[in-house]
Length: 274
Image (cartoon, rainbow, N blue to C red):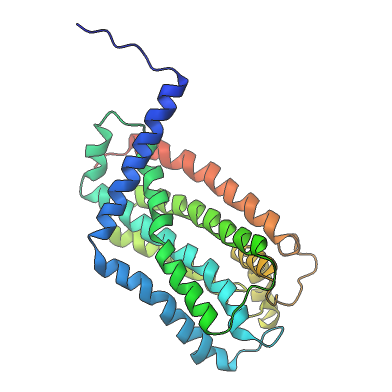
């Protein structure tokens, strides 16, 4: 019998990284074989820009008067919410089809499957983001600050999207079907997205709804991107700390979501079986 020496810390890290990369490659390969989903994700940004920028935007007034520039920072952030729903459905599908059970029998790092799923979600969302940026440039949106702050804004959005992907993982692991995962994930996506400063200035909302929109975490994410891009902000909300310090709030919120959802997701993944 050949004795197998236990791996040291560096060896375990190398194997964990290899497991994650393999998992990412698996999900990217799977996505490449579903061109209908890719086409849908590329068309959605165009639909949103036309629908809200031209159909509804013609009757909406915002600070600065340029609604389409105001809208685009919000739409960049809005896409991260819908991405979490896609991850939830994908995880729930793997659970229903027994893929997760088969992967759990392999000698791989326990968190690599989930981490690969969320990283792949970020990567598959890049073409959609590129289309959204193209649409934004066409309708007149321009970042007003330097390239460093523009890169910082998109990096912040990707970090928040990665954190929301783990929210989708938790939802997918706790639901019993892809349909229920989709319904559960889309509900907070719509509420957080529409009751916020994504599409309109909260100052124009009724007082009770205005408070919800101002303290909505999504409003802080959008305010952070508008601050970094240098586009028009909503009417200042004095006394709302998250909107007065949106970049710090978004960073803290993303890290908190990761700390909570990674812990819950990995533990649930280790226990669940269908």
